[in-house]
Amino acid sequence: MEREYRVLHAIHKHNILPSTTPEYRIPVPEVYALCEDVNVIGTPFYVMEFLEGRIFADGSMPEVGPAERKQLYVSQGRLVETLC
Image (cartoon, rainbow, N blue to C red; front, side, top):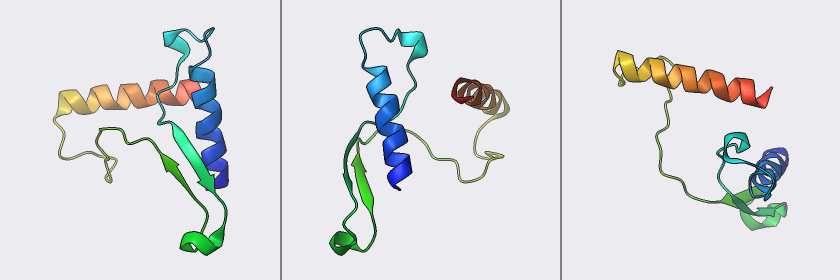
């Protein structure tokens, strides 16, 4: 949990730099706070920005048509390339 918070926070800081042009921004939610005190809810947690979107539990995305599925797969490939 702590590592995920730190990665998201670092990417957000990169995104808001004046020198970071739009093509080099990585879309991530802004994280607001990390709580490492297990006495609060029993485990570390963080609070982040709410973003509209969809979550696909099944990677084959049966609920999406073929054309949109292809577009989603291509965009995921760009994401992986960006992170590498």
